[in-house]
Each structure stands twice: as structure tokens, then as C-alpha cells.
Image 1: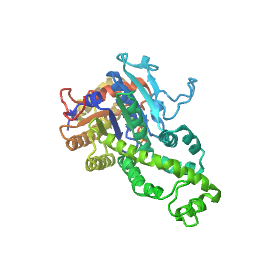
Image 2: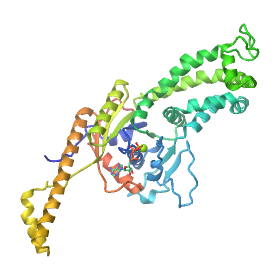
Image 3: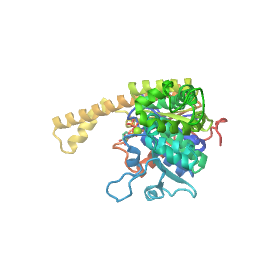
Image 4: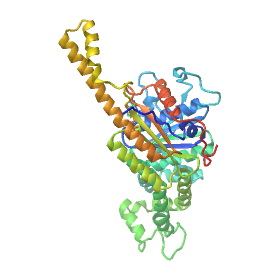
Length: 412
Ligand SMILES: Nc1ncnc2c1ncn2[C@@H]1O[C@H](COP(=O)(O)OP(=O)(O)OP(=O)(O)O)[C@@H](O)[C@H]1O
Ligand SMILES: [Mg+2]
């Protein structure tokens, strides 16, 4: 079977030109971080102001973007802060960036992000000052920070409000977390809605009368539980925390609903990054089903690490000719025959693997449908470490498909 060169109907270049948020998800190790960086770089080279944000605990993106170097004396990278990648590394690119284009990268630190968000929502500086030192607040923070997916969205939402970037590319951790991402806003939002908010609203503010004395609290179940948890001497802290958070929680709930709307917006696109192979394929199908069920804006698949065999395919009938050539080059007849057989057998193995990969790609193309992306990235010889390699990968992705398709639902 001949290895096909798949052509997607929706070119990824179109997505890169129009989307405002691209979420790259997929199972572990398939190349999400590398693909996210390559996509972001490609969009920057096409003239956009781009941010790539990673929740990848392995921090590979920083290495790929040359941001995490131990020997160039660069300052340590700050989490949750966009760091300019280009033009610093622009000399490695095949062509200069168009005027106005830029590429930034950002690492997520969820606990810092949780803190920053709450402090922002607290508004009034005096209130903020009191709350950040509050013991109950400090105990509450890790619960919030346990949802890094949510804080990635929250950061993206905040940056969107500032309008600094045309496109943000979110690199997610492996698949189960990508599914968490879909639920992150909802979970947090319903948690705040149904449980915390109601519970908090029952607690009177200091000085407020609701049938029992607040700091006397013998008859308040909630207060006695909290008193046991934090100690009786923490009750003033608890009162202050609730007082300050009466205002914050409804705002927090509004934000979670807004981030959820952002995920479903017409200019958001989910790309499933996958690799050929039964397990990856099964996980990609599962993720696709999940995105479809959640009515998320699915853009298509990027099939990474695809093996491509040499053309024309190897043919054992060529053995005598190869043996003759090797003998002419000075090998003994036995060694020439062994060498020719080995070379052709391994070429045939590669061909079989490439055919299997091509099969998988065709299956994903069929699943994606004609109005979605199915871009193929070939397996490179070594890891991808440099901006130049990312640029070449980005060009390969952008080259998949033709450029005349238009999605009416994509905001231009
Ligand atoms: N097409 C490719 N050819 C060769 N190497 C590749 C290719 N794509 C990715 N890699 C390499 O594979 C490794 C894993 O890639 P990457 O970190 O992007 O995967 P990931 O899906 O983000 O992984 P994780 O799920 O652990 O976050 C990296 O070392 C990267 O350089
Ligand atoms: Mg990764």
C-alpha cells in the first residue's frame, strides 16, 4: 500500500489566522507542548501577536523556546508572566517576523494564579491587605489552586481583557486533565453556586444580627466546626474572611461562567494532538467524543510522529542488483548478500509501520470529517529543541490542507 499524503479540507493556517484561543489537548507524550509552540510560532510568523501558555509540569516548552537555559545567564523565568521569545531568538528563524507580530510564552503556576485572582477580586486595597494575611484565607487557597486548568483559563481571560494578544495557544497536560479542563469552570462555578455561596451567605457579618451572636457562636454549627478546625483564637480571622469574601464569591462565580463561555466561543478552537498507534488513537477518539458531547468547538486532529517510508517501496526482487553493487564496492559475496537482505528487510519493516500509520491517519481524517483539520507531522530524527526546528514543524503543519476554505462561524 502506498503511504498517502492526507489533505485536510480546513487548513490549519486558516485556524491560525482567525482563532483567538487554540487549546491543544491529547494523551501523554504525543507532542502537545511541541505542537503548541510550533503553532504559536507559525501564527506569529504570519503576523499575529501570540502567547503560548503551558500547564506542562515538565516545562518542556520553555526548553523548546530557549527560555530555560542554565548557561546563558538569563534571569529566571517568572510564572504567570508573558515572556517575549521573539525577537530575542529571531535570528534563528528562516525569515524575519512581519511588523507588529510577536511571540510570548508563559508558564502557569496555579497557586500563584489563585492568589493573584483572589487579590484582584478583593478590589479595595485595605481589604486586600487584611485578607492576604488571614489564616482562613491561606488555608482556603490550596483548594482553589487544585484546579490548574481553571487558572489557565482565568489567566487567558484576564489577558484577553487587556487585549495584548491576538491569539493564545493553551498547551494542556495529558488527556485526563484536558477533560478536566472542560469541566473546570463548571465544577468551580457549581461548587461556588451551590455549596460555598449558600453556606457563606448564612454566616452573619460581624455586627450583623441573624438571631444569634456571631462571635459568641455557641449555636452556630459552622462556626463551631471552623473553631475546632482553626482553633477558637482564629474566630476573628474567620469573621474577617467571610466578611471580605461575601463580595468575592459572586464575582468568582461570574468569572467561572465567563471562562466557560470563552471556551465555547466561536473564535476558540480545540485541536487534538495525537500520534499513530492503537492506544493513542483510542484516546484521541475518546477525547473527540468528549469534546463533541460537551459541544466544544473542535477544529481537528494533528497527527504527530507519523512514519513515512522511502518511495518507491522496497522490493525483494532488487536483492540481486544490490548484492552486485555491494560486491562491486569490494564486499565478499556472503557479506554482500547478508547486507543487502538486512537493508531491504528493515526498509520493508519501515514500510509496514508507515502503512499502519497511514491507515491510522485515514481513520482520523474520516472521524474529523471534511470540514475539520487533519494535519500530519512526520517523525523527526531527534528531539525538537530549537526555534528553527519549531519553525520547520510549524511550516509543515500550516502547509497541511489548502487555503481557500472559509468557516462562516469563525470570527475573522
Ligand atoms: N515530530 C516529532 N519528531 C521527533 N520528536 C518529536 C516530535 N514531536 C515531539 N517530539 C519530541 O517528543 C518529546 C515529547 O514531546 P512533547 O513534550 O511536546 O509531548 P507532550 O504531549 O507535551 O508530553 P506531555 O504529555 O508529557 O506533556 C519531546 O522530547 C519532543 O522534542
Ligand atoms: Mg507537554
